[in-house]
Amino acid sequence: MSIANLHELLQQGQCDYRCYDLGRRVQPISTSEFAAIAEQRAPYPYPHQNHAQYALVFWPQLSNRPEPFIWLLKLPIDERGLLDQQAQQHFISQVLALLGQQLTGALTEQQQQQLQQSPYLFNPSTVQQAALHAQLRELFGQPPSLHCAAVERFLRQPQQYQWQQLGIQGIHDVAVRLAHMSDLHDRLVTQLDSLPLPFLHALAQAMEHPQLPVGLVEPLLAALPQLATERQRVVWRMLSSRADHPALQQALQQSLTTTADSDMLVLITMRLWPALIATNNSRLLADFLDQLARHPQAELRLALLQELVRLPALRGHLFVALRGHDKPNSIQQLWQQLKGQPACS
Image 1 (cartoon, one colour):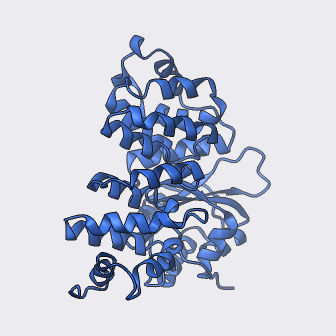
Image 2 (spheres, helix red, strand yellow; image 1 turned 120 degrees about the vertical axis):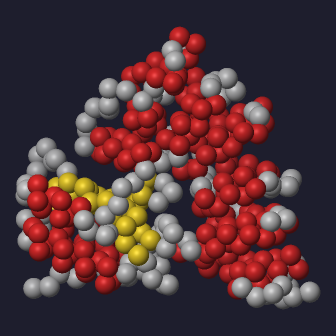
């Protein structure tokens, strides 16, 4: 009996599993959504450089204390945004040739080396690995790394500790567990203007992956006007997992009433794009496109448009906002640029 896709492979191997996107954010994809993706009934939601990058974390069904196995996969997607079926089948055939359907059996060193030679496996960045490990420890009820306590102590009393000695894994562990550390919320917000900027950048990198506690959204937004520009960018990045929050969308629209610089346009495209399709704020996408159309660098305009149009959730909204002779001339020029044609005068 042939196996059609990765969801079916894991089912027939009697495995439970979770999927995590490893594109711009490390975030879970539900099992039902991944089944639809694997069966080509739905496009991959977060394409990255024309590929789907994700972790499949799996373990034997009915296991009381699962010790998960992880495949870190990078599969091409086609022009419709669907997983390339030939690549998926090729990887499945490699797995079956090595393991049969005993997916959770112990691998010999030779089998491990052969599997690692698959062109569909990749090495995520250090930050992605730390984010994934932090989320998996939380998922399986395991304690955080030994570095977590040091980051907590630093956030409570930053003057007494050296931030340079903090481990990346500990920063990600704290980010994942912020919902259980409500006493740190006020400490974080009140220190946004004084914590060392390199540490804030590392913390924002960690906080963008898990779901930010909703109680932090409005305090972080309220702190923005008092911060220098670079620290504001860091806070926006901290907030990126809550781009669907109405308060964030309102603040973002207000920020677009003045000229948006390159960094802010990139940040919205790469991290805050879900805000652009908010059902309660239809003007946000139009205001963003207006700011993008005003930007003087044609190469940046095109690169950001191409990033946005690859996102299945945004593509239709983007086409509606760009098409039509009734659109302002600057928006029509964006549309012509996206189509690869000279802009009409």
